[in-house]
Length: 341
Image (cartoon, rainbow, N blue to C red; front, side):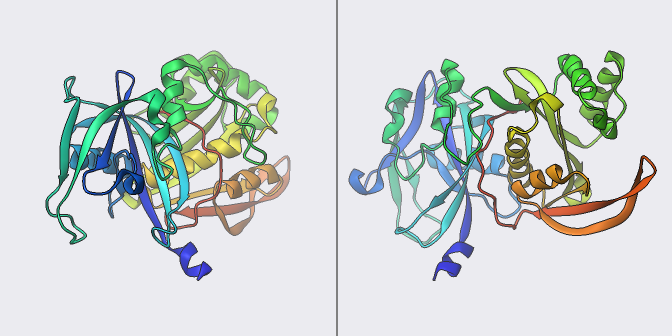
């Protein structure tokens, strides 16, 4: 029974639609509140659909509101038992309404549900964020990030084994003004030369230009600590095959704190479930075991070894290769907040 249960996973999206400090919620009209609880829009990611598209669709279908994504908040695994013998992998999003005006309270529903059950209806309303602790069934798992976005106050995660403790850690898109931090990172360790040649501010600007070229296929995410770039996780996308080459680096002064492990796991999760890729792959030199630890923590599986691939200081070095499929088991990790702007 345990094995069958563990293999039954469903990919879901959860939408936090926020307007003027209030959260969009609903409750079923014909199910007692003690049973159905207060919910937010959520639903299944359909085959061939990205999580981002799914959450926008689900909000519209369930409430009639058109919304846009502000940012991806991360994912959580939720044990649905005893309601169902399965586990949900939930992808959480912060959204906002497209239209300025919307009702204070209104009715919505499904007259002909796809599951074949009878008509369903529910009442939607705007709930003050400070009262959103009433959300049922784990739907509030990432709501603190939305509150922190509004207030600027974040609670440090000191949970043992999760790699927390850095409340200012973020993943964000790369910017032109990151060039000085890129130069500092490349100067922090001579081994950074393996990532490219950056010996001046002009080199750093060129490096950033290559990464942000819309025709390059790169999806770079800055590891930002207290507002400064300290590392990078990037997916170089092969759009035709829906694959991505996955790579990362960290400034020497911030290594050893688990930041790149959390960041790599978060970006890999985003690439496979939000960006919609089917496969990620990477390689690392066998004399860099720390990089292999990052790969395994991000859910990658070792697939082989390329013997004597690189010539480094006169010695041939093997490279271990790893892959992760969208269908592979998801690792357990503490996701880093992502700001897609």
